[in-house]
Length: 147
Image (cartoon, rainbow, N blue to C red; front, side, top):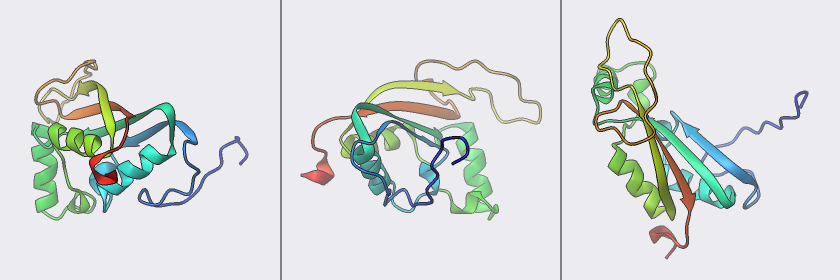
């Protein structure tokens, strides 16, 4: 608490925070490692304040980068063997089912994986085949899982 930050250890499926307690939530490189992504998104929606935003950042399985990491997973990589990689459509559908509305996309890692990567700009749109995608979503009314 030295810096005014109250840290809590928790699982994304069971957040120890009150309803509507955050103006923003960031799930960066996280969704592929959780046991129950729909429950994590439901909990995220619960803790977001009205008008609050969720940023989900992930490796796009439908990219060359996604293929690289899925290959590492198949080879039993220490970290990636536990990952489940998702497509942009897959994440967008999960957000919709959690009563979250996709408002914007950002993309990067449009270059193929290599030993000599170069600095890339961020595209403030969805770029087909981008290796890393961020989605901005906000909560809406009832989702399919709430009906």
